[in-house]
Length: 153
Image (tube, rainbow, N blue to C red; front, side, top):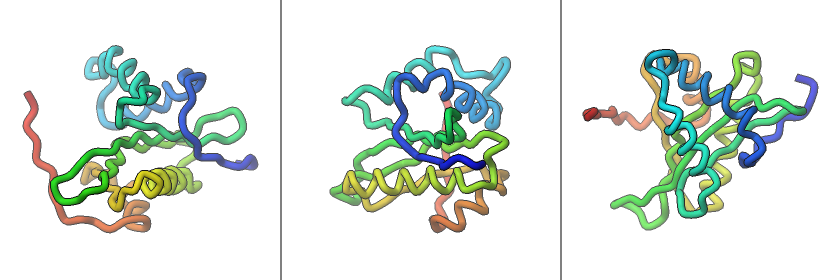
């Protein structure tokens, strides 16, 4: 990539460039075709980024007129701290942008926003089979050792 990459907050006019990244992220986790997220979820997710009362935020990595990656994160309270925790929920880069530092730049962007919000903790989860992402994560964070349990209804 010959053009500088900028990590910035998402803008309303980014929807048409954000959507393919969002769809690619969901496809990566098996949420496409018959198992795709409902359109209402995509629309609600998008609207939350611009609602001052929502704790959900988005950053994008942009080069020229292209969005190369996205990250969605949120702040929440904890029983073990006064300041908010930051949960990095989604991270995705376009296939042709992988291995070029875009994911790391997006994570660093979340770190910056977390510090600005007074958070002392950013955390996330990934699937145990996502070895490529884990190589990056091992460079920019430490594994907590916690496992995730869930029950779907």
